[in-house]
Length: 454
Image (tube, rainbow, N blue to C red):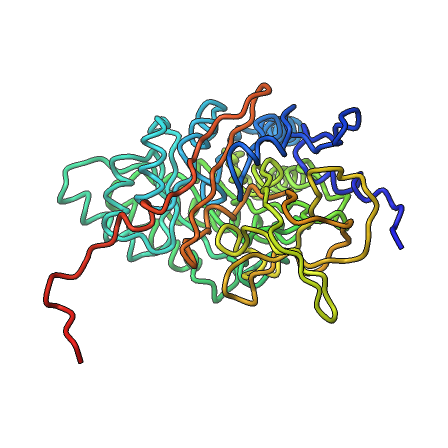
């Protein structure tokens, strides 16, 4: 029996702010940025990813308004490129006056190709090699040191190269994680990220002895959390550290960065979700209060949102290729999955979906949405109420803008999908679909005679 619950109204809230169901059109298609998703899927093929600029801009506005209203000192926003980075995304970040967080020489190359200003580039990374450090020295304005080994390598490079150091931050390991999946926690005692209090003091002494431009303290406790309260103890710990370094070394941090990682709703069951302002207000008030209690001047507050800036702006579109009925499941088998979105396999991430054609049709029981790859973990959605579907239809999965394409692969020879940027009623191709030629471009053949018969 078909269900009459207007599920689509709840699911539509997960999509970008420009998403609409064109109820006046004969097909009642789902649109985004004023563009028919079915037509875009036909034109560009699937899997297809779309980024809605209006949603990106609205989120930046939310962060800026929250910081202006709640933090009495100077502040800034860094876009965490690890969530999704390409030349177009880097250009957008630069045009909006954001800093760009790059991890290593590869992301630095993208940032520089996009023309991101030197002083707006920040470099992270838990295990930077010499090539990463060399790139950071010449291409970035700020470098976050994760460990003492990195600092020693940096000093050697600076001594041998005759070049100036970028501004330096030290990454503190607070010993406190936020509530999130184990694989996305970063602040706990046994985390691979950051330095202990003792190591931070040693690094600070070494920086000052060498005359290096030590400017800030950074920490990060995890990604995709929904309650900011665990950040309170870490902020207090960081401020105690800064006060101690002031008293011992006469050094005062100009900047404090509590990272990012604020979560977003991926499923209608997670609505309503605490706002960006709720998150920012907690950090701002705790930091301001902590500085007053310790007699510290207000530092520059730098936040590093990635997921919460781009996740909702992205939509993935797939073609339903095969419908299978098994003893206990209705399988909707799509033309993409694990290769372009490994998050369900890695983190048991939960998603929702809508048919692009007539998304308001009634539900007809549950289905599992899976991809074509040779892994039983290639399931994008384990169980979701869906209407009756036909092979050849297109399905849209919202909140697909973060940590999907950036973690994608060529598994089973998959070609990375095309990506569209939607703005002012137009779609611009910002990443073309990979071709079969792309797949073999890096490969070299063995010389004649190297393969012999057994």
